[in-house]
Image (cartoon, rainbow, N blue to C red; front, side, top):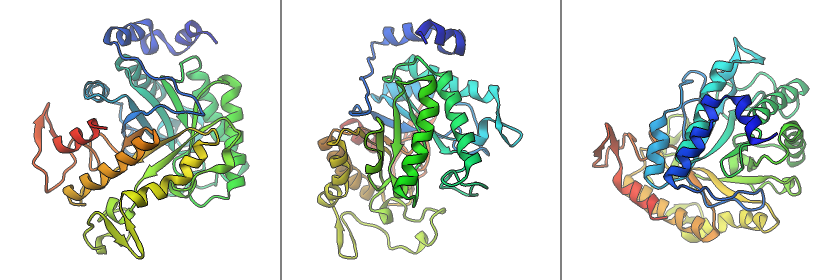
Length: 356
């Protein structure tokens, strides 16, 4: 499918020539991206469709500001229930899909790579409530999920990989490696039927912490996480049972016989570097620390993470831009915020991110 045909199919108001002209006018050139080698993207997760109960339109000013501040990547972790009709997972709502088109358009307008992620896919989620059927074992769930990915592949066919990527599932939990590979293969078949060159990124197993060596040879890239040590990043997080009983974290942090410092972080990510050496690109799809962790501790830990990822040549995306992990409106009690365009800016965290 040619670029011109793609523009006609999606709609000139969504992905028209004006967008490409706007990018050229701003002089932002996105790096090439391949499954074997991902760019060192730097950016944020945007959560407007993270949950069906929220399901808002993406905000153009987020893209504008992210670009202005020097970043070039957004990941859109989304709940498929946002775009299905009246609970029927076989029927897709065009009005909601057009809102996702808008995000792709904003990415093109401001020179931001957009990574589309099924945070809740048909048959799979790490969130509550669980899906009624399991993507890993149920034929119907696999068929429906493949249908969804096929639709996205057809919808965005022709957009270059420098601009757009697909991130299949968020953090597969305790899944048998070969089961994981089999399901990924089925999704890839559905995607590549419509767009055989689309860049696909697969999160690691065990909530993104285990390098998915089972995917070698599938021509996909991978994404890890930056939430170690968990007792630092999720201290007093309401969705983590018992986290309100943990001791207030310090950094470095001693956890049993392990001391989490920069050397331990290097050790943790070594399997991912080895996977990259076998021809599988790597990035950090999510990282950050919740707003109950002391700010000074977060910044010290974050600096070491960013140092390690720079050494390894990996990109990253903070969870999130606006909100409890982010640089805007994070609600921390120990930060002197700067008033910035109607928001509360954590200038220290921003400048740390910018320095990497």
